[in-house]
Length: 362
Image (cartoon, rainbow, N blue to C red):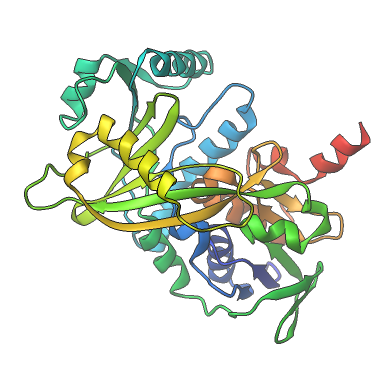
């Protein structure tokens, strides 16, 4: 019989919630600490589970890890009891010839890596999504991508948990001190996203916040409904995405820039998103603007997350950048493997924080 552990998870975003839920379901005693659980970047995410569409030359380890986690998503969603998982796939569109060149480069890379991506003409794009602009130059179809309703996911993950709503002051491998108490256990998991660097010295210069603004819109009775697929596009070099939701909703994102821990939505960010989206999907101009929000992605120094033990034994589960929702299942499984004393899932070894020390010694 496997030993049951006391696990303290610091951070209640999608990664921390997934870790806590999986560990509790396995019979471990779990304490989750977060002053605002189920909020932050996870609450404003687009919900794309798209390792292939996110792929880029030089980031093969990110692609491998993302694909391994994607394979776990259907079972993860089934175990959770439903969270708006969609298997419609992704269409990627190019607004001008320069954007099309970027997609040609991505397609060539994916084909060389043995991944599936079909090149489409403008006419073929329109046949698959009639609401797309006729002026688009072409695109790609990536059938293997999934998407999830991030807020339904967070609600489902949080339901069986009772988080401690306090700030963390200090943590170690078996101790977490908050503003109100000291917690002790067998393992501390640091899943605090962009704030992880403030909680552990090993991550001080390895994880940083990247601001992203998103909009949530709603089709009206007189407008064309949202696209059936997730639509990603390059609009004069600027990437945007449109992710459909139930009830005629559409998530539009996302800006990305260095702004520290600023979470204010700017007029410039809203304008850029709407202008780009209208040129790709014109009907959006008549949609109701239901919400504006900003979140802080936890970017790592090399775009790989940190999954594994830090020098003092704290288990890092952070730095997932744009892939927090995608990689939540495999990150949770990596923590379970550590608790069981078994090897981590395939692809996780590349995300070991030990690579930070290896780079310093070179």
